[in-house]
Length: 209
Image (cartoon, rainbow, N blue to C red; front, side, top):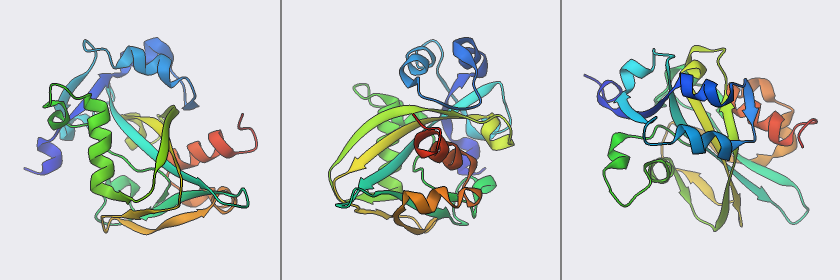
């Protein structure tokens, strides 16, 4: 039995998400959604292997984007290509600006810890080395019901505004990584996974507020 099949991940009923207000794409109303869907009566930890094929639940995924503004005022984002060792095979070979992963039942083991924040911290520690100070803020949610992988996941977008562009990968699955100018990323949206493309357009595209 694989790790994916045995791992128990945090999920919320898709019905609860819809009750708050279904959307396709990006929503900047993170607080309104999280205040409701993260209530103890709504969250549970279920086998990841089962949840990957069950659209009646949404697996909650922290999605951290590292940004840096250089001395000239140019915005740069940390980006990479998902390698073959990446856990979600449906996203392999796609470019991404997001770092994160599932919240595990192990993250809830500490009674004094917030499972969501603990899971995000663990995922970041496993995947990247952050070697500069940063200011974090939660800026929105991503939902994309069109592909199979999106139908069973709900992303929570966090911006980490870096004091220096010093983020490096810890895993071989994070390939061709580094900070690149935002303008270059916006000009190559087709090469990115859907969630990254949604974030790039919603947060920095022509119609971004």
